[in-house]
Length: 618
Image 1 (cartoon, rainbow, N blue to C red):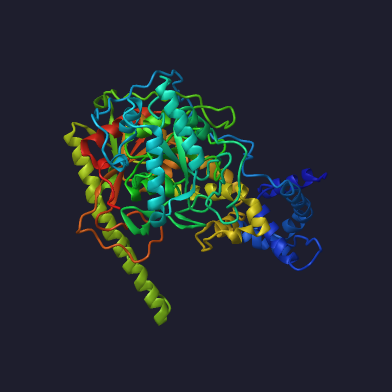
Image 2 (cartoon, rainbow, N blue to C red; image 1 turned 120 degrees about the vertical axis):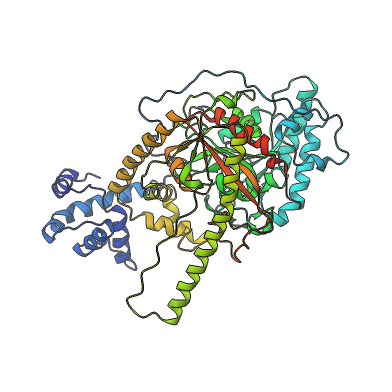
């Protein structure tokens, strides 16, 4: 359809506005006017007033009249695009690059150097005793034919069937595929065709990764029978490494939280609480000793958060290190796939198998991941985010109410005050573990350098995520199928997608420009240091997901019996609520595509503390 866009753009230019300022708002308002009729409603001056209020601009009566014809014509373009019914796997025509100007990336690939596993002379009489062994240990046993892939696979599948009714961490057990791959692995190893340290090891895939022949549900109601004809790239690469897929693990619906269409995935350390999300099942199953390792994804905390809750080790790689082909898209500029394991070197071994361009995901860069277990981590410069380890400052007292409060309002205010006080007590308690980590590092001979995150409005940039997510699931909103999703509160996707439709395109571009500043300024920190130690649940989580920097999340101890009592309700928003006996975590950050070096330092800390060797008593 030919549109007179030139006149419309000219008018908007004189007003200082962009042509795409009001598309979501005007379309929605017009649709509401149309409800119950067959006529195509016209955009009216009153609708422009409502949209302008949402966008935070003022438009005069004369200017509104000048805009009407162009806006009505442009709306026809929205209809034409919507009729395409763009599937989730179609990306926008731009590629996010997290590198600042002048950054250099090494493409020289070297043979990985793995540590030597402590030789296990005899396999335990009860194979379940190997359930919590590391990838390094299991790989060594399989390589030496001390245990077969088939036996390991059968053991893990049996454990999944035993503990899934309690923890709800699996959507689909891929039993037939797994047993066939395990048999194939045993035959290859017997013939001397050893593929590497993942050969024959059972693993779990977050159920946003396509696996041919099985449902890929995205954890969401209405998608239970969805399937794809080709495996995701990460699945293909782990197949090539000889790993054995035993299960598709749960994720909160469309990668939010730990609630999915089958229930809520539980934390093995405290089954009254959720595992957090969205890589809920990958962390829970790994922590429960039901897979050797798993693949998760992170857009804004989805590896970090469940790894914290479940006491696993997670690697969130640099954006663009691992191809996302065959994975559900939530945010094209923020989605990242990475391993969730029991130890840092396990993550490095898995990363070695899955990274690098595949010719499909154009955001994936040809950078090298050179794992070296013998790297001299003492040569690295280590910083820490000083403010994150300081006592929390008192919040200013709330202003007195100018109008009298009802009894109900007073009760709500008192409840909010109690909840804030309890949350602060939990944060204060957990800070003691962060401070102990700094002491431990100093005891290891690390000279910690104080650094700080640049002061930028990181939170104000996060609507970028929901805007992209709303586009990725536009059809879900427009058809009303979002009603099939399990969670429908104001904080859940159906409402978030609707809110995002009112996010002006101009502000989306401006937020991306602010993101460019964040990338440049955060990257400057890694000119001073090689690794940064950070509190996991802090501003860095938002900042580094926006800038695409890598992170390793490690267990950092377990809350004692003196820990604050957890709240009765687990909203899934706060990972400090665990209470006595639950894990806490620590995060290490690195420069872009310096993931291998980052892992080497995190491994040194982990080996010095040994928290990864503890596991829940199920």
